[in-house]
Every structure is written in C-alpha cells, then in structure tokens.
Image 1 (tube, rainbow, N blue to C red):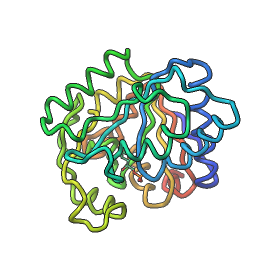
Image 2: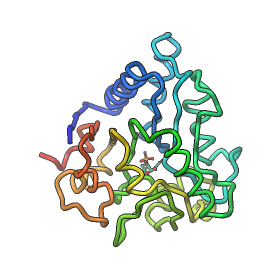
Image 3: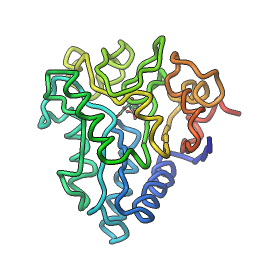
Length: 242
Ligand code: F6R
C-alpha cells in the first residue's frame, strides 16, 4: 500500500486527479471505477479542468460506479447518477452510453445487481477503482459486518451511514434505507485501487484500514491484501498514523 500525504483537501484532490489523469492518458480506453460523496468532488473538478485545457480525452473511456441508492430515480438530485452527471459526465467528452451506475430504479435487487456485475465483466474488469471511505470504514456501501460479500448486492444502510448522508437530504427520514453496491470481491478484482480521504473524522477509520487487522468489521482493511493500492489523504485524515 502506497500512502501519499497531502497538506490539505486541495492538494489531495490534485494528486488523486493526477493519478486518474495518468490512467486516462496511458490507456485511453480504460475502465474507471468511480465513487460519489463529498471527498471526490474536488478531484472531479480537477479532471474537468484538465479536459477543458485539452489535456484529457474521455471519448474511449468507460466508467462503472460503486453504488446507488435503491428506489431512487436518476433525476432525483440525490441519486448517484445525478451526482456523476453534475460533477463529471456533463463536464467531459465521455459518451453517456459508456457510463454505468447501478440502476436504482430497478426494484428487483437481484436483477439490478447481476446486471451491474455483468457490465463489469463484459468490459473486461476495472482498471482503476476510486474509493472514498466511510467514518466506520465502509467502502462502497459495504458496511461493517461479519463477512465480506463478494459481488454487487443490495444492502440495508447502517444508522451511522444514514446519519452521515442526512446532510444531503431535507431530513434524515428522506435518506433511502437500502442501496446497491459493488461487493468487496468486485472492488478487489480492480487492477488498481485509489482511495482518497480527508478530514479528522476519517482518521480512525484510515488508521484501522492501514494498520489494523484485516476484518469485515473494518471493510476497507481488506485493501491490505490488494497488490496495488494508493491512498491519497490529507494530514488530518492521516493524523492517527504516526
Ligand atoms: C460513495 C461511496 C461511499 C463514500 C463514503 C465517503 O460512492 O461508496 O463509500 O465513498 O461514504 O463519503 P464522503 O466522501 O462523502 O465522506
């Protein structure tokens, strides 16, 4: 695991965007695994700016997203599809038909999850998977539990995740209670992993991810077993590491 320590959120965003940009330049038909949440907003802004300056071309890129709320429509401004559209897809020359987010409008969970997994397989796997990390160590919506789940599946969100996500909704009661998420196996099969984290609220989870035992109680700890992981985190998020 390679850890890049940055001064602050801005530098974290630039360094992480640089890694994704290198992937796009070196392999223009890459499959990028993407994440939503507040952490990657800055890096998506950086990528959009590089595209504007003519430094990046997304015309042969495919993307697959980690997760989506179940029972949410794509035009709901809290859906992850909407987030991706707003922060990246509408800002670069990616072809809409090459962007895949789990289908939150599909009520049949098995169908939605199998379809997402099939897309990833058909694309030949993920070249680089971008991850944020939850305060409780979750990746995607793989919440702390008793076992690692392999493939894309439907999960009930924990109280702490619902509370953390409530900031994006009018009230906590409006936060969806379930989501479709890539499994730990889906994530681990990506050729490379890029995890971004900022802020003191992530320090404990990041410490347990990098230095604690590999356990489903801290889902991100499984990344210790992946051969190619880069963590880009600011000083606050790394404050428990030294
Ligand atoms: C988002 C996702 C989540 C977030 C995590 C951190 O697609 O899968 O695991 O990465 O909850 O969220 P932020 O960045 O908002 O702190």
